[in-house]
Image (cartoon, rainbow, N blue to C red; front, top):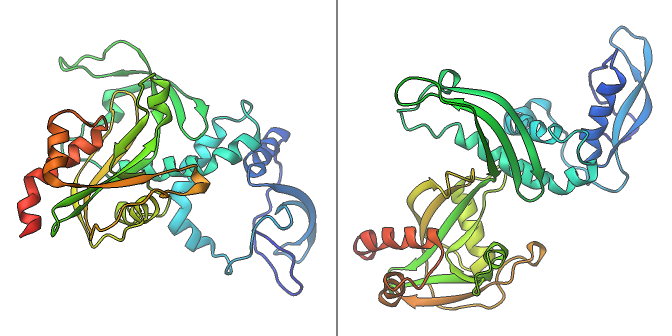
Length: 323
């Protein structure tokens, strides 16, 4: 951000010839961060001066940090910010800047997940530039989650292009799943919390027993997110992470990608006040002997798919982890 300070200067580019529409689009994007245009006299490279409009933050909204570096920012956040800006501008003229501001943390989370998805090829990827034709792609909804609609064709197994399909997708970030396991005591820890989608599905049991789980924040690795979520939700410090795999949670409807872990830990206590109040979380935990846990898995006592997946991985690797 730019702040007034005697004897200091900020370098920038002076854009000329912007249309009213160009300026409106800039105001829409920056307005979501509570930046407002103000007139400012600027010094040009040829020694002349000019009047310009500069985006300044609302006073008192942001705290000053270290001196900003354009190159450092580009290296760390440039690619993600471009993807986030594409989603934001897809709603230009459809929603107000305030709604974008409320949704922007989730927009950044989705952008960070897209960057990771681009690196996820397994070696047998097809050429989507040749095998997929996009006729129309547009955002349909933005909030904590996003929704996109697309009209496309894709190449079929006989080599021809299929008919135009109209599809939609729930746009989400990537998440981590962590099943805490104590190899000494041979116990696992589960968390229970209320899940609104289960309630909306009219399931009479919307309080779900699950592994520790949470979204990967922008700038985080999956491992960092796993360690953070274990502390936030279950108030435990993991000694080591065992990677159990990664997969899309529902490839026909959602972009969510899950990184699955078993987290080795000393499991000695349960809690009833886990989670972050700022995120509306109200979590309690329970510790189960592994044999009891697997009995409940086998008797269909759990309804959380990631929990079942990581439970079966643990069953295959338990002896190694205890050795």
